[in-house]
Image (tube, rainbow, N blue to C red; front, side, top):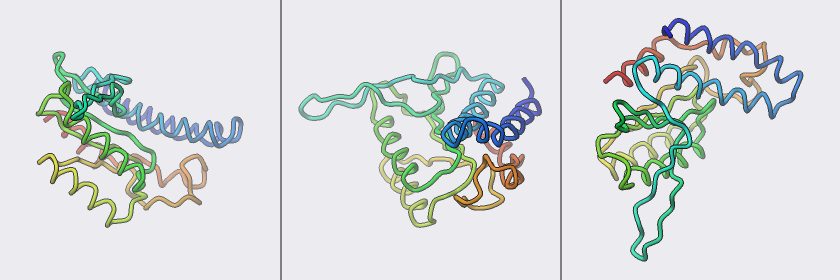
Length: 192
């Protein structure tokens, strides 16, 4: 699959959202909008030679008393030659609550005995809905605790998130055109 085909699929899926909203309601449209960014990530990871896995649960580090959880994950765990290399979370809109939750999950994954030390972390999101302070604080917190940076790719950076202008309304369609510069940066990150 070529990157142009992946971009066309993304644009087609966004074009279909207003009909999904009209026919099946807001819940269905919101669910499908989230899948658009997961599909974009999956297809792109496959195109550059990864084996992306969903529901690829990892165990946490054990606490002092021996407690451990066994369901750590983000949207896509990307493997190459059987080795976990990249962890990618996908969001239509990245707000501070979603970012904070991802940071918490990423910290647990970083400490997991099942996650290699050289794994890289990223978020691929449509629009930014985070305040600058919360955005910078959470990314810096992760870096301070782990020594690693999280890459964030906003592939619809034309405007900041506005709840009155959702992805599933046809009149705001242009706000969700895929930014090819940012998309190419995501491809480059996956390839390196």
